Amino acid sequence: MAQEASSQIPQDYVISVGDEVLVTLWGSVEADLRLAVDRSGRVTLPRVGPVMVAGLRYSELERAIDQRVAQVFRNYKLSASLGKLRSIRIYVTGFTQRPGAYTVSSLATLVNALMQAGGPSSAGSFRQIELRRNGKTISSFDFYDLLIKGDKTADRALLAEDVIHIGAVGPQVALIGSVNKPAIFELKPQDTLEDVLAMAGGFTAVADRSRFTVEHLDARNDARITELSLPQQAKQKPRDGDILRAFSAVEASLPQFRQSKRVKVEGEVQRPGEFILPANSSLADAIRAAGGLTPDAYVFGTEFSRESTRLSQQENYDRALRDMETEFARSNSSQRTANADEASAQAAKVQGSNQLIQRLRAIKPTGRIVLQLSPASKNLPELAVEDGDRLLIPAHPNTVGVFGSVFNGGSYLYGDGSTVNDFLKLAGGPTRGADTASIFVLRANGSVISSRQKSGWLLSGGGLDGMTALPGDTVFVPEEMNKTTFMQEAKDWTQILYQFGLGAAALKTIKN
Image 1: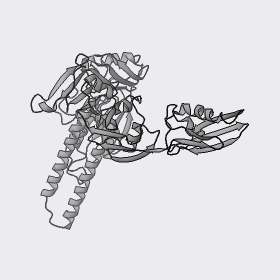
Image 2: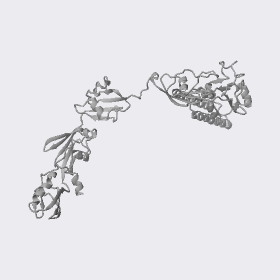
Image 3: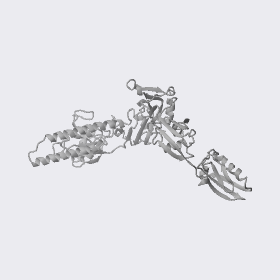
Image 4: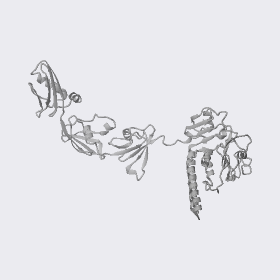
């Protein structure tokens, strides 16, 4: 323990009253002595006498004792070191967490004492810490050198009755935003914006290094915020109370015409995957990046989804559902019941309405955009892509689906020249509860053809009679709304589904 303690003692340590000296002799005389420095500054060796050691540096201790022992003995070896060290009393005053008197080791330094006292308080200065000895300031310590730079060279060893005084905090500025360590920093008179940035560890990797903004405390009722160009104004000195902000170079979106586009292409292409395309690329460019279409690609049925469209659809879809829910509530509250049977029917109707709303809320818009293509099209339009777009080119389908109020819903093999009515007949035709006036067809490209439409490029006479079916069609037959089913108040629910691009899967989910 003594050797370990000695190895930590600096060579210029000054020995004084209260220290312990360890002396080992071997050869013509053997001794292992543990001696305390007495009030007169001496240690006393048996058969040798007193040796004055107070005031000596640790590096001089062994030589001084050896010279005294050599006056009495010959042919010996000697080793001298220090054991237990004396304690000293120092004082920590001013704006500190725990001011007062502290007993510390004689090896303690200014930093050791500051740590023991809890450091500066919230109102204390980290940059003006004075070490006072015998009424005079012998050193000023800047804690930032240690905390920010790791530089402890300005630290000083303490002597008994030293006073460490922490002054009041100086001018402060805040640096926030894209820097490595946003914080409030205390300034010295010579500090510049460049120095404050260094205190914060510099810019982050994604920061805009060309500018700062500064908000002056004394101008907040006037100009408030001004912008500073870097590095031209980096040597400008901030003022007390300034708020500095560094900006991110990636938080703001670039204009679409400058952005590279990340597009996902799946399905019937030669190399499905994600691709980074140059700005102003089109859907056709995305297909070329994926190696082109396979022979089985069904271009008419392409599912083209866009994130910005999905968000817009979701917002409008939620609004439509809220309006429907409000309409249900208004309709139910306005109806009166005359007997228990009517009350029971009314309760069942309310429950059915709530079930419908819950099912509709569980379905989420996909962001699909209907591409205006002819069924025989072999190429996608020259539509500019956006970041995050998704293209799914399906294989050529060979079925047509029939769902809803029919006797035998399902998928049926497609045949050239078949009409929508042909597939309705294969499904057994509409049931007695079907609303035949509201039948609609959901095409593979996401468009909807309804018998309620008065005109259309695929219709003749405003109905579905004689309309040629296409591969991948889904024919849906709604129920008559005046029947006592859970859908009887949902007069526009089918419109909500297909208007928001929810597709055939959603129709089947609601029906089930």
